Image 1 (cartoon, rainbow, N blue to C red):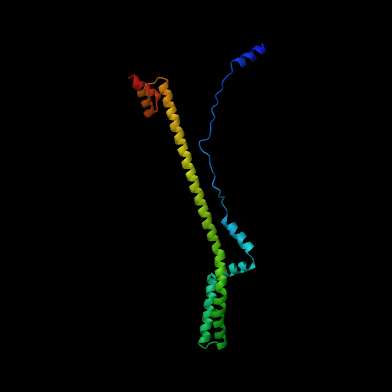
Image 2 (image 1 turned 135 degrees about the horizontal axis):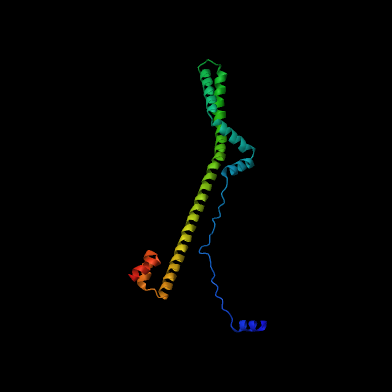
Length: 192
């Protein structure tokens, strides 16, 4: 008996039609990975060395009101020395200290410090740009995905209309179904 079943199965082979479902859309991720700019700047400053650390330290200290008060006191002491209240040697030392030492030495130090501290703004701008580009890429991908879904929905709608027509439903009833989306209403309208 087992052999008969086997022979009949071989005599009438069953044809199996497989429908392969594929994805409508393939996501291509944007290569940008978000970074913590604060951590990145700290790492850069730590790797920069001693000179950079001094430049950042002095730049942050000179850019305070306490430094402004100190320079104001220095200027007042210089004024008192020029007016003769203090010895002339004090006037010369104040003039040398403020005009030569502070201006010539502190200016490049402050410039280096500002470059190092400004690096954070550059990193933030770069990160904002990359994030914006990733967002733009994601929006484009969503739009392509929606377009693929629209195309598939239209294809499915055309197949359904074709099936309705093939099953003998009159074109008027198909049009009513298509406009209203309700088969029961379409049957009532076509019968009435």
